[in-house]
Each structure stands twice: as C-alpha cells, then as structure tokens.
Image (tube, rainbow over all chains, first blue to last red; front, side):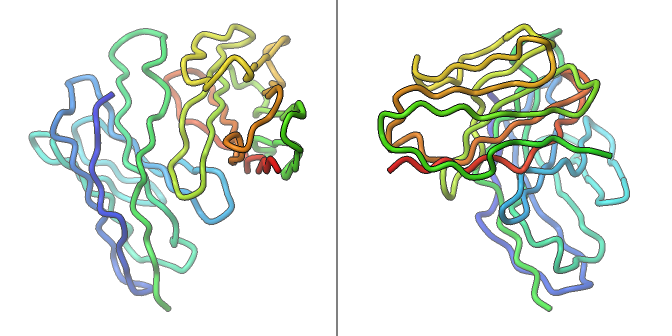
Amino acid sequence: DAKTTQPNSMESNEEEPVHLPCNHSTISGTDYIHWYRQLPSQGPEYVIHGLTSNVNNRMASLAIAEDRKSSTLILHRATLRDAAVYYCILRDEGKSGGSNYKLTFGKGTLLTVNP
Amino acid sequence: GAGVSQSPRYKVAKRGQDVALRCDPISGHVSLFWYQQALGQGPEFLTYFQNEAQLDKSGLPSDRFFAERPEGSVSTLKIQRTQQEDSAVYLCASSLNLDRDEYFGPGTRLTVT
C-alpha cells in the first residue's frame, strides 16, 4: 500500500483556518487521496477525497499538488467540534474489485483547537 | 437517517471466553468492512464483504477470528478463546459499493481481562 506521512499533531485557534499537510511521494496514478477524521470516542468520518483537481465540500477543501506527491486538507474556520485525529489515506481505485478498496490508516494528525 | 450501529458498545470478557460483536450496516449498503483499533493507533483492516460474500479476510489476526454476513445485511465478528491482545475497539463500516465512501459505526470496545 502506498504510504502517507503526516505530522503527529497540530494546534489551531477557533475560527481560524487550518492547513493539514500530507506527503505521499510514492502515490500511483490510480490512487485517490482520501481524508477521514475521528472525533474522540467515535468511529472515523469521511471528510473529502480527490484525484488530481482541488475539491471543495461543505466540510473542507482539498488542495492537491500538481505532481500529486502532497496534499493539504483545509478547514476554513476551525471550531471546537473539529478537534479530532485526521487521517490522510491513499486508496487504489484503478483495479476492479478486490482488497484495493480497504482503507489503510496511519496514525494521523491530532488537531487541537483552542477556544 | 439511521447510520451504522454496533452492539454491544462495550464488552468485558474473561480470557478464554468467546465473544460475538454485531454490526447493522446502513440499509442498502452492499459493502461491509471490519477494522480493529488498538489504543493510540489508527484502525487496521480485518475483513470485508460484498453482499454475503467475504472477499478478503487477509487482516484477521488468527483463526480465532471469524466473520459472517449470511444474508448480506447484518454482520457478526466472532472471536473465540479471547486473549488479552484482542482488547481493542472493533469498528464496522459500510458503503454503497466498494468504490464509495465508508460510513463507520461507533465501535465496540472489547476488554479482555
């Protein structure tokens, strides 16, 4: 499985933007970049995903480098509810079926949001 | 709408006991995944189903672990002769299909004493 590298922890202030980086220098052409987050005592929650172009949804934005070897999850205005572990995951969706679709989590980035 | 539910939420088992953990996926979701999450770690894949077919069980740590989804809906993860190293949170996730986003349940926290 292609590997991702994230900082262990980051800190932010409430209502400020947060940029969570992820390096994935061995990404393959069929790897999609997925972000999930896990709030305390809950299961992971889907945030956003993309392949090449930047993506926006109601939760966040995903900025993908032109060479796809890194990406950044952007929370535009952090709230206390955004305090969680954020996981950057590569999922190979180039082959039909099979175990490519399982999510391979690392340790993620623990985001602390200060009031 | 109803999300993925898991029961029990907490389970304490004595070493050597058998346990059964239940997952109710979102209605209509074809794919179902089980993950194991040790304290301070990210979730690790155990197995997944497409309808009732178990297509990958490469993550099951030993033959004491067994999962089934006989009617393509509810799934049960069974652990026989539990050991202390089995203590973890067991997460279930479902998705409309393999290439869609996974929706996770709250997990079952298993403590083996």
